[in-house]
Length: 191
Image (cartoon, rainbow, N blue to C red; front, side, top):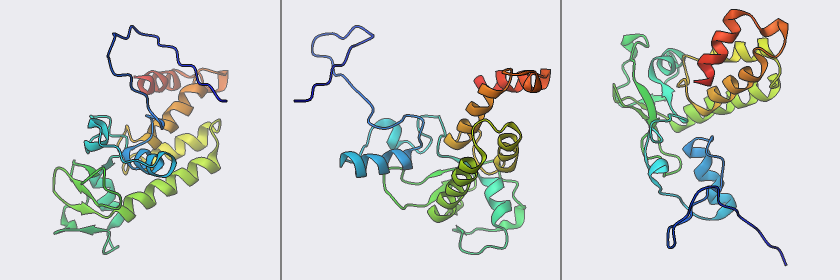
């Protein structure tokens, strides 16, 4: 009884494979994989899901220096020779060790520190909750969140991109948020 019609916007050659995404491509690998398991009952091993950097998008990456600074004094969150003596100066990016396996820890691809899945999942949940309480039209609140989490999350982490996308809609929309500084930020976030 139900029919779904799909119309191509590009030329498809006879015999060519047609691909679709089942979940939002703006989510990070952990979210996409969990959604696919729960909603569609399969595991994905496409090139993007299998790559720790998500094909260079870093939608699920964190900044090592920020994580180290935040976790000083919290034992167990950072493992494998986690000498915090560098005071959070590692310029590395923390990414999933095995992106398609649930519950695996993340690793800094610069200093090789292992960061627990619980820590990064907890940080993501914390920011998601803060973002939900802030609202997408609260310019000062969104700017605060961006500033508060910019040293923990990679600049293109999906939650940081979400905040920037909300700010793009705000900047230039009214005289209050149309300063030269706001418009420069808007162009930067659009890029």
